[in-house]
Length: 111
Length: 116
Image 1 (tube, each protein chain N blue to C red):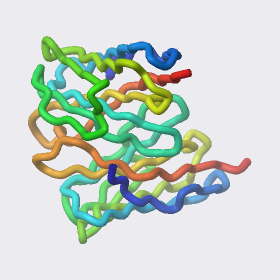
Image 2: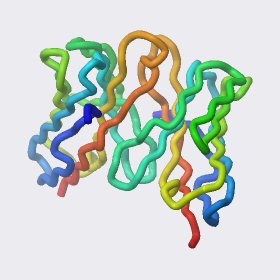
Image 3: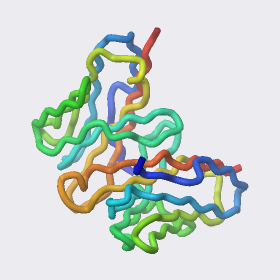
Image 4: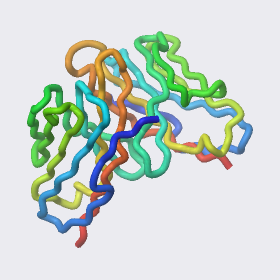
């Protein structure tokens, strides 16, 4: 099935650094969501975006709904060890209840 | 805690056996979803229920797969005659059916299936 493209595929950063990642699609979405997944667990919802151009924050996390409705961005400021994991974007369209997920960005913090 | 729960968390089975997984959604959510996730990939949609009605099924859901939600509460996903390619994490999610939050799906911890 279709999967959205996320970049980078993986990131190796030091604690305290800021992180940026993005998600792109060939088709538009009405809603974008960002999830974090730890090994052996289900994805946890971080942020939901509903309007093109919208910028939403959740603590140290900030996400943006791209104005073309074909992309979204996630920033993490001042990373801490518990930020380690895989971040997935997901798109949703009205009248179609499934979420289409991205390929994931794996975040690793170097000691 | 009233999050989504799934049982079992892990299942190892031999090829050709049948397996059944259970999902209990968040109590006030009447939408329930099943996804499958293989290693290194994002979750892929399998099927969706609104209350007890199964309203959408992916082409990934072959004839060997069946899902039910008989009373509109918990759901079961059964795989018959398992194959090694069925090895994956099976994730359940739920959401409310109305309001902006209906687009926000909350996932359970998943059931990891290994077919030997």
